[in-house]
Length: 164
Image 1: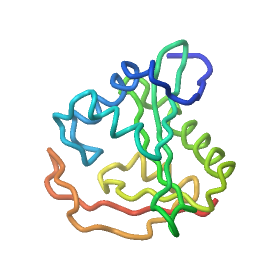
Image 2 (image 1 turned 30 degrees about the horizontal axis):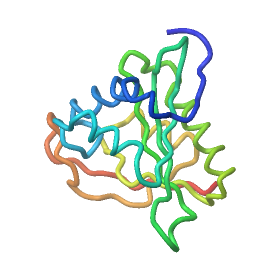
Image 3 (image 1 turned 90 degrees about the horizontal axis):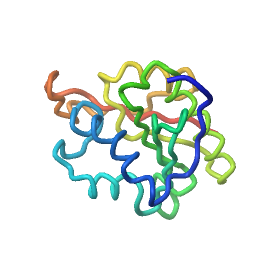
Image 4 (image 1 turned 120 degrees about the horizontal axis):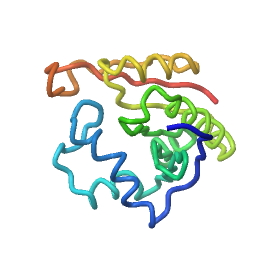
């Protein structure tokens, strides 16, 4: 996949494109703490509803990634945002996650957030950890054996944080 990457808010008409991105990640069961058999409608609700704003990364009219942003906590914790990121398997290694992160950092700052926090980064996800750290995120907590990985068994999850 070549061409410029466009990031735009995901809308109701993007359900099929979002599902194409989410389905492989959720079915693999090795990056998100969701039911591996989650339905399309439940996955789309998980990714887009509530206080979440979902964005779609599109290259050459093909959706290649998505992220959401939301307040990490309500009330007194709403000044810190939380995000989730997924890149389509065929677009990995093409700087999609990096471009989405850069967009998310700018979007968060413009929205008035003072920090970004990832609550559940799997210790086995070396690529994500490397990317987050390269943008100044620090590991501020470790949840021992918090995730049952389908191939690795029980693994730790990290809490990562960065001021904006």
